[in-house]
Length: 95
Image (cartoon, rainbow, N blue to C red; front, side, top):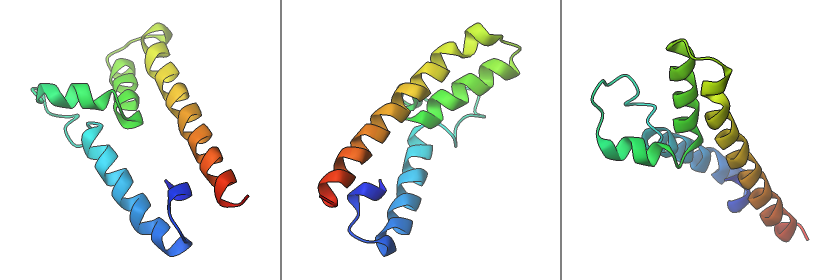
């Protein structure tokens, strides 16, 4: 997200908004609801917070390593994608 802003003063506001929005859509605020809406489970798969919550719930339910492989892999893929996009934008910006 920082690679998209023009200066450091904008970064705090943009990061705060992005984290809050992705947390809401990722299911962090509805994780404790027993009957959360169906769209929350769909949108949670698009954000790293949703995958982290899924892995955490699996561990709390007594799951083993096999139960957290998919959430961990999804988090790794999202991390690589975000890192690659940020690197490309920052290289263009400072080239």
